[in-house]
Length: 285
Length: 170
Image (cartoon, rainbow over all chains, first blue to last red; front, side, top):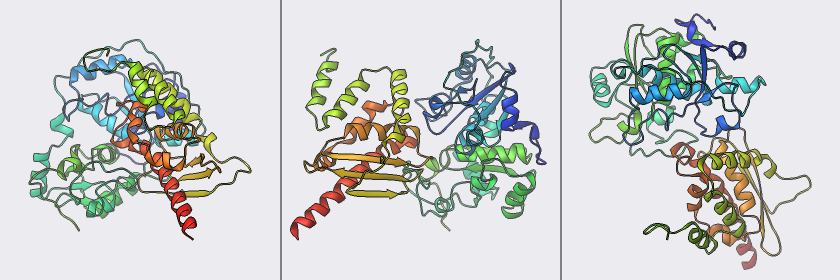
């Protein structure tokens, strides 16, 4: 476990800890990446692959799968309701945090993140394998409903939040926030008509929360960034957003687990919804 | 026709052979079209593994070298072009470590598939072969850089042709 004075140090584990627990039958390692073939090129022994789009999202409606389909996904990967799932992935754990957030949507609370993600594991020269593990099917009782009302924000809720001047954190790059870019730097255009940000949002790019080796900064550093500089206060009702909800999942994880905020929601519609939505107000500054 | 309105696999291959793709690329496309999704993934990984072998080899010289980091791609890509007296192109490509696996695979595929094509042929190649190789499931917003390498090869070919044209006019 890693304790840099985090509110919930039990959710963050080091690469060393993972290496020592590869054979633990109560754990399941889940790799989630942006690079769709990265898992196939090599992964941590015993890790299964969960894809943010084909596994977690409904393929016909812009939404997540049902609790029944989620239960089936988990059972396929040998995950039961009481399995502790350790997430890791590329891009400083963007998609790992996204998958973790999605697991929380379905009520799975035994979750962890490997600090530093895939980059750190690889940088340390640790072993990767191409062998895809096969586990005995898990037993997963589906949740009665997704926890959309607890950790997820929709357009109307975000609009109300903005009008009431409640804290909104825009985790995109400064260029996207100012409306100078309609795509993420180094990425293709993802179909947004207008640039800018949600009125009243504070710009705190996700990257502020991590060190150069992709590990999370200490709680002291994170408090300085989110509280002293961005003005958040413990107890605030916060909505985070980006373009499609993955970078803001990272910030959701930081605020929820590392700083202990109890009311943080991820607006997964994010700028690809807001920037295209008829009648949605925007700011540019 | 296999089904009403559906051309058979053989008809597809015939159409491909008559298409604007250079022959080596056509062979690769035909190979991928006959693979299952799992086999496609395996083949793409294999091509991605050989991406580093597409870098310039010791002692090679080039007519054009274009090394840059663009907004559209996650890392630096170097394109090296050699054109023979018979106008046959040979490409070598270097990729930064952050380049995605699909882009690495496409690098190997294009270096092999376009080997020997003329610069004019390269400029005319439509990009519609990419989903045939990669499969619709793997072509998504965040993996659009699979098209990037072809764009850079075309760009190098265009620059070389412009230089040739300018030299002819002088």
